[in-house]
Picture 1 (cartoon, rainbow, N blue to C red):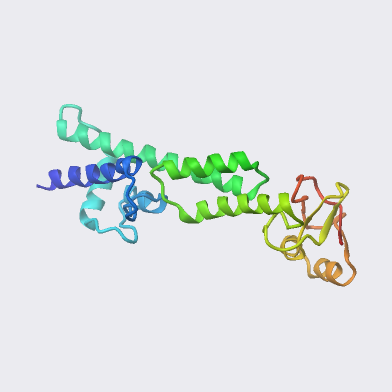
Picture 2 (picture 1 turned 180 degrees about the horizontal axis):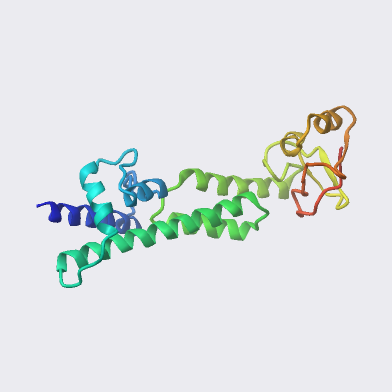
Amino acid sequence: STSAALLRLVQTHCKEIRSMHESSSSSPPPPICSTSALSSFLSGKVAAGMEDDPLLMHALSTLASTHTCSASGWRVDLDEGWTYLELTCSHWLEMEERMGRAAREETSMDKLKALVSELDQSSLTNDDLRARLVSRMLALTNVAVGDVCVMCGERGIAVRFFPCRHSCACVECVMRELSSEEEKESLTSMGFVSLKGSDTKLACFECGRQAMNITSL
């Protein structure tokens, strides 16, 4: 019946997500284990890689917005599974926002390691986010052992920030932050840029202090 198919669909995805906590297999994770796929499912849409019946998806999404009948065991089971999926999606979105911020901002090595571990132990699959966190860890390692840009972790340090006087960035990474062609030209040709009154809001990549001037080394 349709009601049984709806419940089976919800419970299947709940089981797939829960199994990610227990699985040690190297097989690919279920398609539902990403925020985009789960968000699409909860909105009644079929995400890429999913094989759910679009008609069942639409019916399920519509039914989830109606009043619960506590006298129906089937409806109670359906709502329990649906609530689990909603809470899981909310948790995943919070994780991605928090980890994405850590990958962009100055974050300690210990914190980055803890975040990677948290992501690996969760049921969420986000290879891009994990790669960004690992890249940030590598950048910190490179900075600790040599004169490497703290932003990209690859190119040599070539720019100093003032007034903090930190030398911690490559030209390429700084160039991406400059808002005008005149500033970019000034850095490459004269080796100096004044940011007083500029639309560019550039903070030192190392300490986060607002830069008033930058110079080439």
